[in-house]
Amino acid sequence: MKKILYLDMDGVLADFLGAVEKTSPEIRAEYGERLDEIPGIFAAVEPTAGALAAFDCLYDLFDVYVLSTPCWSKPESWVHKLNWVKQYLGPKAEKRLILSHHKNLNAGDFLVDDRTKNGAGEFTGELIAFGSEKFPDWTAVVEYLKDKA
Image 1 (cartoon, rainbow, N blue to C red):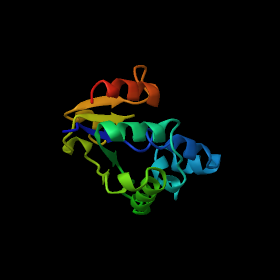
Image 2 (cartoon, rainbow, N blue to C red):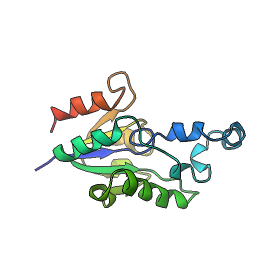
Image 3 (cartoon, rainbow, N blue to C red):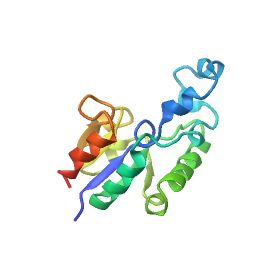
Image 4 (cartoon, rainbow, N blue to C red):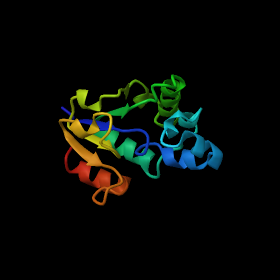
């Protein structure tokens, strides 16, 4: 039986900050700390470098799910996240998207996330801190997880 692996979307699979940087300085200033409320921002994100190849590799080794928190004040963010998964990860992932504000309620072995918010810090399996010194990129994450499969 394969171990369960959750992959966060924004900042891990998807380059959220890259999409933010493409917006005007005026828009960024208007939304300040609420960048996830920028209209259409989740429709504009592109994959993080190495994310698609990493997903394919990890999909073969683990029971993989995409675990993400949508912007609760922007219902279109739910649809944009689903469309992103369909576009970039394809059919093998589209029914493996979990949208939740409480990531800790999902039972599993590993969670790759760039933050501890929305329950990620209370996840009962192993939290892999994407973008940290130990796991700066997808190459480091995949190499580590290959040994854990």
